Image 1 (tube, rainbow, N blue to C red):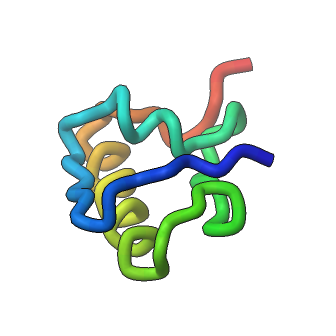
Image 2: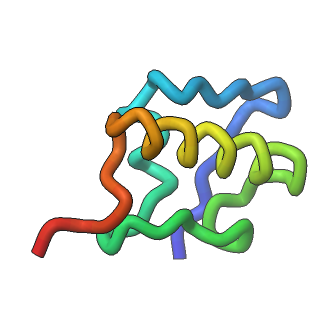
Amino acid sequence: MRKVKTNPNTYFDYRDVKTLQRYVDPYGRIEPISKTGLTAKQQRQLAVAIKRARHLALLPFVAER
């Protein structure tokens, strides 16, 4: 289990793919709040950013096999 320490004022940008990939598991799923260590508000912002990046094809919806 890895917990990522983040600044409470963290803003997740959907264009920052490298940062978003830290919060996505090898199967392409968003990591749960217990693994990310984010607050509920940050987790929601993260989910929106990941979903936007997926919609724009910056992140894959599923992992490659």
